[in-house]
Image (cartoon, rainbow, N blue to C red; front, side, top):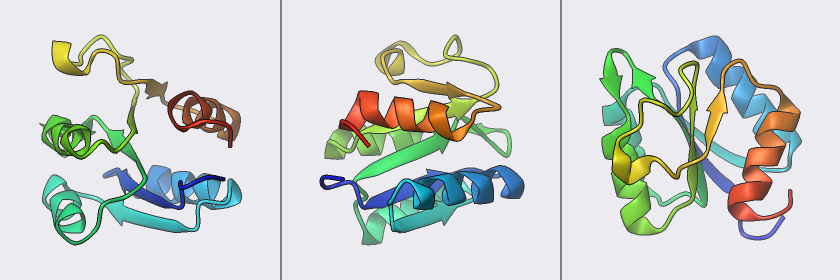
Length: 119
């Protein structure tokens, strides 16, 4: 793995968050930081810039697009994870890959490879 050791997860469903964390650890990503709210994601970003991020779109009724914008500004690759597909994304984020829930480790590995190179 080249320069993809730190990952931010923004996910408000604990079971999904922990399953995703396990998948990432199994892929060799050893620094996984989990946020369950948008405010928590921004606190993590205030202290640390990850190498990659996985953002649930709907976080407790709010959209994660502000976090996505900050990651984009910093040049951090990221993907969305949602059960709604990519139809809901604003135009500025239409090209961001989307993992459709439920997803499996192979789906995650594929989207990671597409955004950051081979895993």
